[in-house]
Image 1 (cartoon, one colour):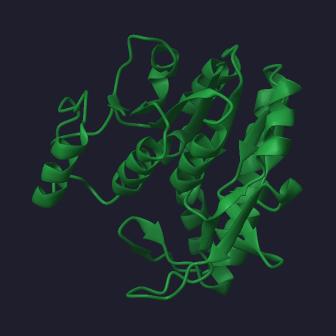
Image 2 (tube, one colour; image 1 turned 180 degrees about the horizontal axis):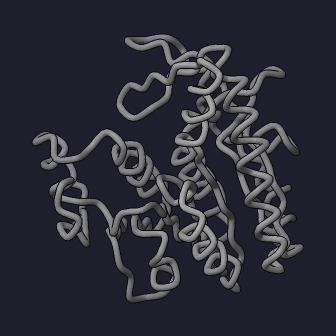
Length: 262
């Protein structure tokens, strides 16, 4: 079975022109089929502040009211997505920018209100990935670049980029040997958030559960970890959380960062 790299980029990397350019060069150089999923929360927050749209988070996830939905649709689906696609084209990487609405790629349902009302946030439906079209794009050596937006009944929905990466990894694992890589500005999952050197190189589920109970993890890393274990439990063989600067290492055997395996 052919290898497929599904790579999510976010955090401070998108804000750092030098780091982002270096990452995109490394990403473009990958010979195997690949998919890129990006965030952009910091950019949306910055522009939201200029537009007097306040950002609210619970457990690392953005609350999306109507004004925020317009904001993230513009920022994620427009500004960030097209800048990344343009940069990849310059690197001779034939990329195509997508939201969940494009090509019926990611169908979702608006998250029901339970303890928290997340607003216009989408949860991707079971079998909600258009794997047929995605597979055809990859066969044509086209590189999909996904913004963190899904849709339902004609409405765009904000969806966590880590979740989209995880769902895509699970869906495409029927066709490929998938390695899901979460890239950000840290060297991996840290045992001590104030110590950059405290990387947990291997994080089995029992150790994760223990650390979670102790409150070791910061809010920002929780969505990555939740989605990593969801992917593993659904059949993805490998998930890696690490520094965007280590991407060339992390597509090989001798990885850096935090490796999670089934």
